[in-house]
Length: 68
Image (cartoon, rainbow, N blue to C red; front, side, top):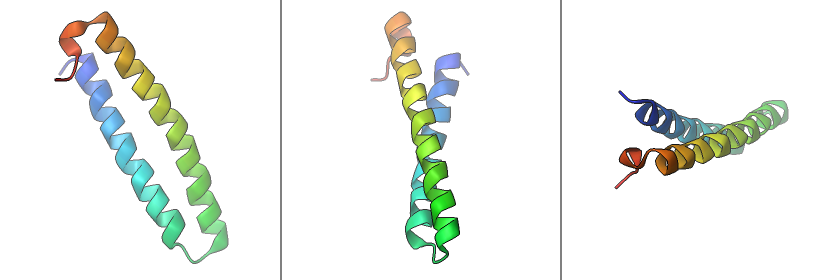
């Protein structure tokens, strides 16, 4: 597996984690847990943005890694 494929797979996993944390934050009854899930989700959003930027850089520098 190439570096680009690994980064894209990681990005996909991060998106799933973000969705799960969002769901947990929305469905949690405990306010403390809700805050923790929401705060963690915001951290994951930052990581996701960084990974999306990296994917774009990889695709720009190495056109063979560009998604179809």
